[in-house]
Length: 630
Image 1 (cartoon, rainbow, N blue to C red):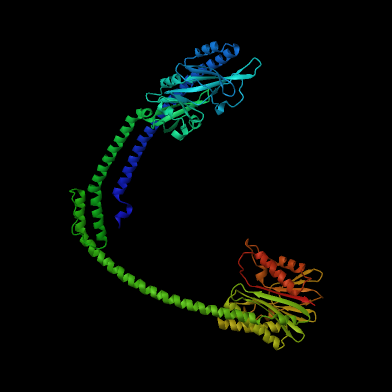
Image 2 (image 1 turned 60 degrees about the vertical axis):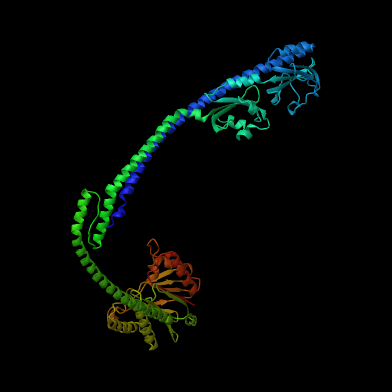
């Protein structure tokens, strides 16, 4: 008996401990995950609210700025006093630092600028101005930096009274107010907002050092485009200030820019720090506690059990237990003492059993050798029997009438075949010619195999002998044949017999005698006659005297009439549904093909029988003889 095969107790304990620990940790982690999900929902709501507030604030700023530009353009188009109009424009918005009126080629016709700023003689048109403008349309340039301030140009066309564009109004705006507005937007305590244009260049940020380098877009800095941020309600990445942040973005409604707000993750998830720390501490405590339990269980229970199981295995092999060293002073020590006291008895018993097993093993080996010898003898006997069956099969085929013999008969067209179900069949047929007379015989021995094949050969020999001595009387013929076969069967101590019919043919007349299957006669006009042979004879070899049972019947043949002899292997052939082929089906096939030769009729019958049998096993010999009057 192997105690370890049922699994180690320590392994089972570890599995249980791991299961409990896993469930506990899973529960704690699930709770914290729920807290994290709730916190992220709260952060998302806060950031989205801040984003909406930033968009609203920035939109208000640009609405005021665009309103000033539209008012300025209307004022310039309503009066010819440029100087007065420009002074009025400068007072509309304190963020305006330069005002220029220029033609379509960029030549400056008039300029009002802040004190100390250089005058602009020609304004280089950027690509965004090279288009046809509509009334009230305003275009924005990229942000630029001059003397630590950021500016942006707003350009709108000026039209005459006929609606023809005459010049352009360009207003340069100091974005300091926009920068201050950006500083006022807060997201939590450490979060912030900023603006980028559609291409990703920074417009406003709380740290102006990010605005100086206008060669880098948001995609260069973050690996993200403004649209990718605006398409998500909440996203997660390493922000502009190189801290991991939660962020959200929305497009502004007045200008084609985006407002983006970011909040550091350390601030957003700070409320979860204490629950997460508690989970870690609990997990560490549980792990150390379970480790102490496992060590105690291993030293006090598992190790003593292993020593006891090993000692028990030794006793099963017949070894005596001298001493089991256990450090515990408990029930295990008492059990070890009991095992040691009983091990000597078990050792003696084991040796006795081992000796008996050895004796039994020797007897089995001797019996196995005898079985091997018998198997060799049986194999040799099977080879011999197969050889004998093969010889009998060849002899059986040799004595059947040859095609050349049948073709040499002038009065009848004859075809025949015999297919045994086993190696040696029990069916028999023959066609013998003696002068102008023919003797046609067909028989069926009970069963098949070697004995049936031998009986068939004896019958063929006796029939040929009686034919040679010119015995023409059917009664004498069958009586002598029966006595000969009966005596041989008695000598062989064999209980087989056969049904046998004899046809004597001469000049269109057949004399039928002997008991066998029905004879089928199909006239040339298709009429079918069935001749029963039950009253024409008696089974051969069954009784010594059968003379009183033998009768005969004459059959007169006309030109093209067909006579068919067969064994029950045809009519009793079965298909996969256990249905028999039957006599009616056989007569129908013969009648349908009566106009053909005897060989063709034989082939059509065998073909139809094979088709009917299908995949079913053939259980009996199949013999068929077809005669057709020439």
